[in-house]
Image (cartoon, rainbow, N blue to C red):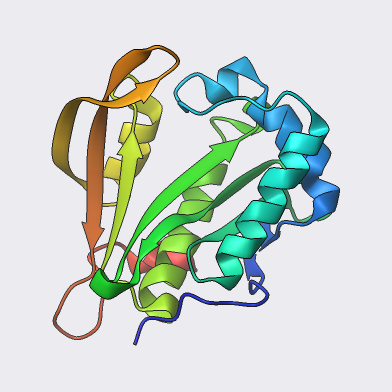
Length: 197
């Protein structure tokens, strides 16, 4: 049985990071992330016009979590657990097929330090071992080579390239789909378990 519905997300820890539930107190940080041109360069979503919009997004994500539609953690440094520097999680779940779409964002001040890789390892492990997912997919802008390389590093395989399948900001955009499968035999996953230590 797939276990998507969590009234409260469990805290996940990595050597440097604390992955915790997002709260309304994270509103200013979320607003900063979603209005940062560097962060949003390849995230084809509308930028919020106000802090209130970001607070509404947090509320919507919480409601979706309670319905078993997503599981999204705030990323924080262990020495500053109250300050969200990014988020990561399963934005859409397909319970019938034990599949979820993963997404992530991180403040540019923390890029190129391996932090998203660290968080991604932990969330993949949680998805396969605790949620009991069979597959995890990622939908990226084809121009986002950093995200592509991150996914390939973690064992994702390119499954599809969709031409002009997404309409945003007055134009049709392409999408690349990457997928990671859980191995059928022995209950182990097709990725390096050592990444979770």
